[in-house]
Image 1 (cartoon, helix red, strand yellow):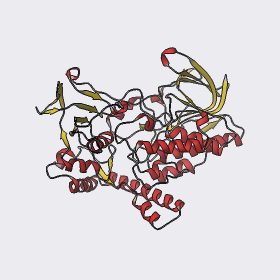
Image 2 (cartoon, one colour):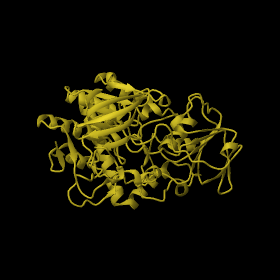
Image 3 (tube, helix red, strand yellow):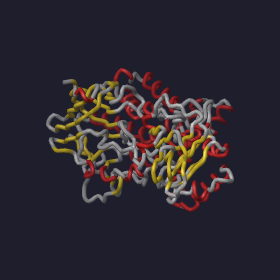
Amino acid sequence: MEHVDVLIIGAGLSGVGAAAQVRERLPRKSVIVLEGRDAKGGTWDLFRYPGVRSDSDMFTFGYTWRPWDSDIALADGPLIRDYIDTVAKEYDVDGLIRYQHRVRSAAWDSAAQRWTVVAVVGDPAAGETVTLTAGFLWSCAGYYKYEQGFQPTWPGMADFGGEVVHPQHWPQDLDHAGKRVVVIGSGATAVTLVPAMTGGDRPAEHVTMLQRTPTYVLNRARRDPVAKLLRRLHAPERVVYRAARWANILQAIGFYKFSMRWPERAKAFIRKEVVRQLPDDVDVDEHFTPPYDPWEQRLCFVPGGDLFKALRSGRASVVTDTIAEFTPTGLRLTSGAELEADIVVTATGFQLQLPFGGIDFTVDGEPMDLPSRLAYKALMLSGVPNFAFTLGYTNASWTLKADLVIDYVCRLLKHLDDHGLRSAVPVPEGEVERRPLMLLNSGYIKRSLHLLPSEGDRAPWRLEQNYLVDRRVIQRGRIDDGVLRFT
């Protein structure tokens, strides 16, 4: 049975970064990355719909230790895939990844001080498995199912004469040129698809964004203004990167705190910005004023105002209503209105994948009941030894938090080695009040919140979701803090 010091699950942005830094900072550690698909890149390899892009700026979405070397603020999917590929090559991660290895179970044995991990190799129907043991297990598998997005059903869908597609599984031969398209949804995917399908060399005849509830949408410059200015002044690249990165971090934290403290002012600011860019025939209160406060769900950022440009061009429109049924030629809405369509895109979100990649966990023979666990610094679980998980921010760039997890795990592994220790496990003392781990009220979270672990009411069982504060708690806090128990 093969043994490895650190076993990483997932070869997306988080997993590639984790493997790169373990190799760089702990070169004596053996590392293996198990990836269920046949390619690395995770989200950025899976999603291939038109215009797919990051909704976080690349100066914080890129790794802290591998600067993003462009002034493009919101990069598209191919650029992000290239970035991940480049990092994997530079840090020799490619040779560590074993593709088409889906982890099925992971069992911790305190007597042996190791995990035993079983993975299905290749076609799951064939049932071929491989077993490995690991000193430390690290889940970088993300939190949603790659196999299937969230796909509601409506009456009459079987009678629709056109095509129905979900962005998570976009047909590469789908031709939308000259077609009437209805995009169901109002989140980041929908506001990306609308301008992408109305632009380019082969635009759709018309694209309608059909939303049940509006989303807060803000314009963002395509190119980062700080990076653009400093490069024009011929500043050194390290100065450009650090200045642009910290400008984005402080701006994001500042606007989030402002929105939490003064939600009415934040709503007024967003509304004013949207009104400036909407055509006169689009009602801002009906279509761009959500019934919730900013950051109760994620804001959508559109580069260069491309969504608003699509609406002004007349090639796109927005409808706020609910679906009564599909018809052979389109959709009939609750209001009685009908939308003709050749293609319907269900940008209705994704499904959470729990627990941590759908793995069957046991600790000393006992099944791990995930909802009963407390999240320690939002990266380990109470009572689960030598296990870490990467869960990025929901109110800022995912990678800001992923980099903090990388730093912590590398420090923890070094601490174990330096002190002749084999394992570490978080153990709560006294009563810890439980709170939801993820505070957004987005549908994909509310549907699965009961399956998640909880956070506590105080550190280290609670994080502030604030990068400046979390740096101090995660990156600078002592490893031996009285909460971790060592063997």
